[in-house]
Amino acid sequence: MPNSKSTSHTSVDRRQAMAMFGGLVVGTQLHGIGSAMAQGAPMRWGSASLGSTGYIIIEALASTVSKMSDVKGSSVSTSGAVENMALIGRNEIDLGQTTSLEWQSAYQGAAPFKQSIKPVQLLSYGVWDQPLVVKADSGINKIEDLVGKRVCPGPAGGAANLLWRLILTKAGIYDKIRWSYGSWRETHDGMKAGAYDAISTILLNGRPASILMELETSMKMKPVAFDGALFAAIQKEQPGAIQNTLDASNWASLTGPSITPAMSGILGSRPEVNDETGYKIVKTIYENAEAIRKIAKELEMVSIEYATRFLLPGFPVNGGAAQYFKEKGVWRNELTIRT
Image (cartoon, rainbow, N blue to C red; front, side):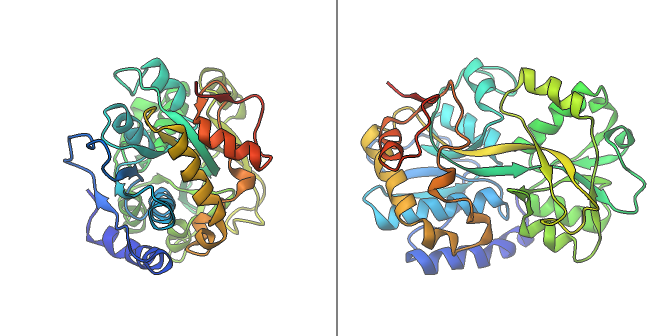
């Protein structure tokens, strides 16, 4: 559970969202809520841990849709994308932040999921780079140097944990690392306090998230290098994993280009969300995209140009969302419309 620092960190973001959209939606804790929504009740949007980029993004989208359309609802704080997928499967949320990484496993009912889950895609919103970072003077340079070290990949239910589990298992060192888990606020505060040797962090479309920039005011960080061939082997098994190149012009801590594992952000929904509702949701978001982007820099990817760019072929897209994207000329023919 997030600590008091988590709450204070996100209070500014929440006040910004409330000021922009009238304060109709306030994020709440989902943990402990076990029953599905009653039919016709406001929709629940699963976000991520307090202080994370996913939390800011989903709270802004949910509040926009609730304020500017007749599709009412609110965002709820969760452990992240992996948990959101499970919650969609249990009908405990209606929409949720997911990433490209967990869709194949969800449909197959493969680990970390215990049964097949078949959500529908609504829209995408850019790329999350998720490097493991260490103090620049730590002497840790590559993933093999992490053996015996204290590593926190963020929330246990987050996609970063799943991503680094795949990478380090493939490298043969996953069970040789001392693992801890926590919200993104707890993760970065723990690094600052010396509790961890390495943590997973967040960059949006190659630019450091505010929580990483805050950490770097007290210590210089660097990404841990990994073998590109190793990641290529992972991509054969998990096509939602992305290999991205970070540029020093966007992240001052870099001394040159750096390859990092990444994933795309996708808003997923329960299959019961009908086409009319799907159309209203995406139309409302993109007709108000300029206002949404003004809330925080984490929302810069909420743009029609990204709406379908990172959606996954082979997994269904809500028919109403597809109709809107066709009207706007951004539909990709290799995508599949939910029938």
